[in-house]
Image (cartoon, rainbow, N blue to C red; front, side, top):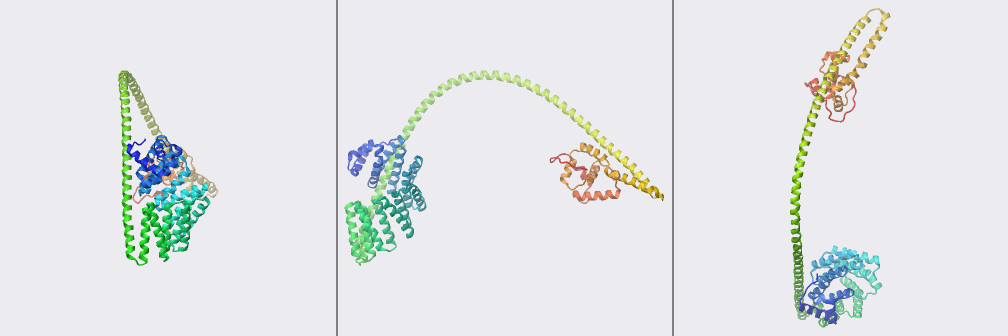
Length: 569
């Protein structure tokens, strides 16, 4: 969205930019008809404009930003966001500056513009540093280093190494600071970048000055001053001359120190650099205090303080002006956005109303038609439901009769199996009783003195005894028992896996409520042996004293609780 300004604001902006560029017609062309090829140069010039007239610089960059957005020119959009961030940084608005630089960084990531992204990392790291977020600053500088190393960009490496060295210097880590400044110096010499080389020499001089190595500090400051004079950097020369005055003062050469400090003062007054002027006045005051001239020291110190107050007031005025400009621009943007949004809403409402009227007519006709169709369908559905209900009712009746017949059939089969089991059991009892009688008779015969028959009779007794334990009738009995009591043995062996085949036979006979005498006969054991078997069985299933074994077996479930497993009697 293009920003709209009044003519007075434009004339002021053009005049300020023109005074900096020395070409008013070019300034007019830049504001109203800027081309993409000249964008980078304009943004470079706005850096100087932002220091003297931040409000005008912001308006200029905002015009370019709106144009870039409307033309979907992401490269220029990122450059403009970066310049706004730097403008806010120079005015001390670090949080807002970080926000704009992060927006620019996101665009450079999207467009994969590694060169611009690396520069933005450096700028963002500097703002983080002054916002006292040192770790984030280092992280940004390291990101920039990665790009510059990959591309062998000596100029970028020099700037980034210098930034990292400056952080370590402020952390009072001179060893690391010197290491990174030397790396910066090597790359700056390789790139033949006089501007960065000047700053690096000055940084090295500052490191040695902090370490009280004044000869080395003087050497690097002199190199920095020579380069600043070569590039006609007036502000840089003033700062370096101030630093040389500090070195002479700290080494006791007060007159030479005063000479450099006065030169810095005169140059600052000539160029209007109030910050450097304040520093020069303060250094002169320190020197007069050291040579025991308190009146002169006080006079210069007061001038320095008054100048600091004036600088502070001017900065506040610029910041207030910038904030007011930001507010005005944002308010106008908001108003324009609201007007455009309202127009879009009105247009949408008109279209929507027309569509709604047409739809209402169509909907009315459709509703009437569907209502008639619905009535016919409901009548047909009702008739169909009645037929389905009658059919389902008849099927349910037939199914109910089938279930009743099946239940009666199952009851009959169960009664038949119970009778078979009872009959089979009685047959076994009768057979075993007969065998018991035969055994007793044979035993009596054996007691006679007829030795020639003893051997044959003894073999016959052994065969009858063996018949008690291996009779095939137990297999038939197990088959019928499982049909009457399904899953009884499966559940029993799952809960008590230690039960033997003899234990299972005893439990089956107890389940059928057969008397103890008949149980002993069926098992072919004596009553005493039966009592011992019952006692051992109680131990295996863990019955407490006083609890009936027969009652426990009668209560034991015959329905499946787990998957059936085979068991044998």
